[in-house]
Length: 150
Image (cartoon, rainbow, N blue to C red):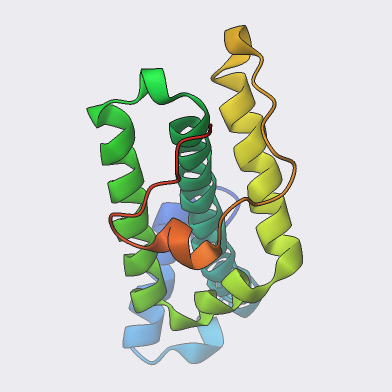
């Protein structure tokens, strides 16, 4: 690859060059190792995005349940948007659905959601539950909100 843009110097220029080489059939000039890494990273990125959306959703559901006096349009909008974005991610990449059956992955999402909810409610020192208090199906269902605590 003499004269070629290197992956380390400018990944955007490198990607354009690799696409041009592919389209022109110059397969021997391709940077196969880095192309393989980039393809793997796409999958990892989609998984990170799903995790991020799930964490935000769960944190807001926790805050909704445990802080009824602070509920507002912003929280309900965030819940609705996260659900839509999760549904879209699962539609566009159905293989991500396996994450929703992975107890270790769900546990990590819950732990992160707890940390986020606690960080956003520090002054009130709420004792959030260490384990899920509702089903995943409920959490993802449009319109569902956790019941108020007695």
